[in-house]
Every structure is written in structure tokens, then in C-alpha cells.
Length: 69
Image (cartoon, rainbow, N blue to C red; front, side, top):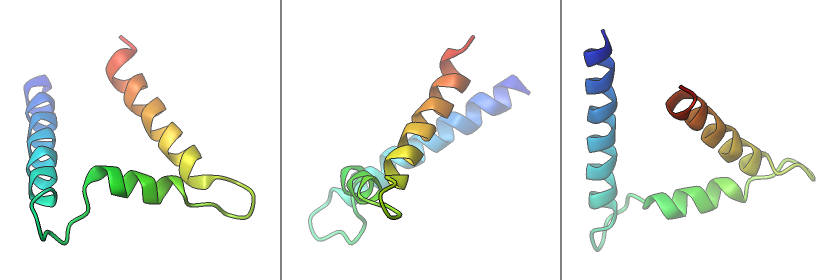
């Protein structure tokens, strides 16, 4: 089961790298990760920076699952 989980995460990382590579080609309609993050971080609902809270929550979740052992 652990091998399956590790394989799934490695597949996800490889797909992420492939999409980022395609996004950085000239004339690509896919935005690179930096542009996507900038768009999400600007999102607000009234005075509440929902995008920043969401990005912080994502990094917290990622750290909790990969660094908490």
C-alpha cells in the first residue's frame, strides 16, 4: 500500500513538472504556476484575503502530511 501511495505522489509530481514545462513554452495558453498563485493570492471577499488564507492552509496541510512524522 505504501508503494502505491509513493508511486501516486511521484506520478503527480511528474505530471506537474510536465504541465509547468508546457506552460513555459512560448505561445502557450496554459499559465505558469507563478501566475496562478498570483491570481489566487489576489482573491478577496470584502476585506478578507480568502486567497491568501487558502494558500496558507494548503501549505499547512502539505507540511502536516509530509513533515509531521
